[in-house]
Length: 408
Image 1 (tube, rainbow, N blue to C red):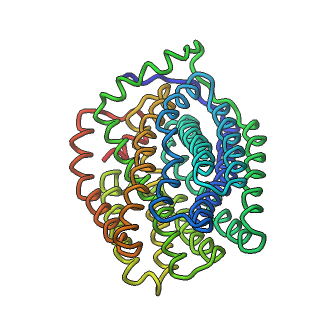
Image 2 (cartoon, rainbow, N blue to C red):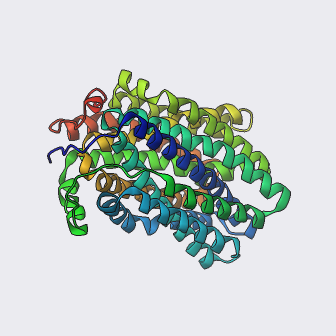
C-alpha cells in the first residue's frame, strides 16, 4: 500500500475540527456511559440470570461485525459526518426500544440498535481524528480519548443518580435526549479535505482484501481485541460485582466515575507516554497491570473499590487510544476509515465473545471467582504482545512521521 497525501487544514480550521470532534465525543460518551451502566442494572432489575445477561450485553456487538466495514467505506467515500448522524439516530431508537421493554427479545432489539450506533461511531470518529493532522494523530487520538472519558465521568454518576431518584424510565429518556443533542451537534463538524477525484463505493471497499492480508493490520486487530476486552469486562463483571457487594445504582455509577477520571488524566498525556515507551512496551506493561488489577478485585475489592476503579480506568485510558494509533500507523491516510473499520471487527468480536464467556463462567463458578479468569486472560495478552508485535510488523514501515517514533 502507498501513502496518499491529502490537503491539510489551516491552523484555524484544524482547531475548529479538533474542538468540535472533542465536544461530539464528550456528548456521545455521556450517553454511552449511561447505557453501559443502565443495561446490566436494568436487566438485573427485570430478573434476568447472569448467563442471560451475558447474552443481552453481547447482542449489541453482533450486527456491528457486519456494519463496521460499510461504515468505514462510507466515511472514506462521503465523509465521517454522515456516519455520525446515523450513529446518533441509532442511539435514539435503541434507547427508546429498551426503555419501553421488559422482556428478552425487545431488549435484544434495542441493544442491536445501540450496537449499530457504537460500530458506526467508533469507525467515524477514529478516522476523523487520525485525518485532521496525520503528523499529530497520536496526540489527537489521546485527547479525543480524554474528552470521551470526561463524558464517561459525567454519564455514569448522572445516570446513576437519575435511576436512584426518578427510575429507569427517566434514565432512558435522558439517553434519548442526549442522542438528539448529538444528532444536531454533529452537523457542525467541518468536512475534512480529501482527494479531488471522489471514489465510488466499491472503490472505497476495494482496500479490504489487502488489509485483511496485511500482518501489520492483523496486529492492529489483535490490539483492538484486547482493548475491547478491557472495556467490556467493566460492563460484564465490574458493574455486577459492585452491585453484588451491596452498592446501589447511584453508588455503582459513582465508583465507575473514578475509573473514568483515571482515563481522562492519562489521555491528556498519552502522546508523550507512547513517544517515550513505544507501542510494544506500553501494551505489555498496561496489559500485565490490568491482569494484576483483576486479581486484586476478589481479594481487596470490597475494601479498596475506589483505588481499584481508578487504577482500572488509567489502564483502559491507555488502551483506548493506543489501538487506533496502531491501526493508523500501518494504514495509508486515504484508507483510514476502512482500516479503522477493519480493526473494529476485532473489537466487535471481543464485545460478543467476552460477555458470553464470562456470563457462562460467572453463572457456573460465581461472579467473584470470575475475576481470576479475567486476570489470567490479560496476563496472557501481555506475554503474547511483544512476540506478536515484533513478528507481525517487522516488514511494514509506518505511514507518518509521528507514528514512526511510536512504532515499537
